[in-house]
Image (cartoon, rainbow, N blue to C red):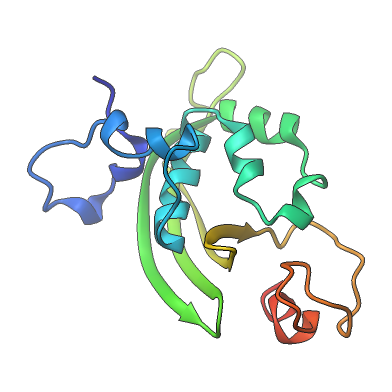
Length: 171
């Protein structure tokens, strides 16, 4: 029974037994379960990178940004990275009406085409990600995606608010 990648963390030392993928992120990846919090979505996205599931990464990004993502590049990066663990630094569950942030560190080693680690030293991708809740679903707001929207236009999340007062504050 394979372990779930999202629970591999120095911060989870209190666990008495490893968590199986089938008891953790699998139901989210298969579309059976919905992430209840932004932190849960962050954990499922990390597992999707580890398990090379680019479709899930795209599906859990804000719908207005999904068509602008490069699934092949996501897949390539996931395959070229030897993931070593996830640490949730902080989860701010309520930013305004529908936003949340998760600060995390994803530990990894870059690998070459044969799968060998390029650097002996473990590296960390440290980020504070913003998420938005739309129709009871959490989505990642990807700050690397360029969207042509003015501050006074309706928000890309469909909230009905102006972009500058909604997701524009975080992108």
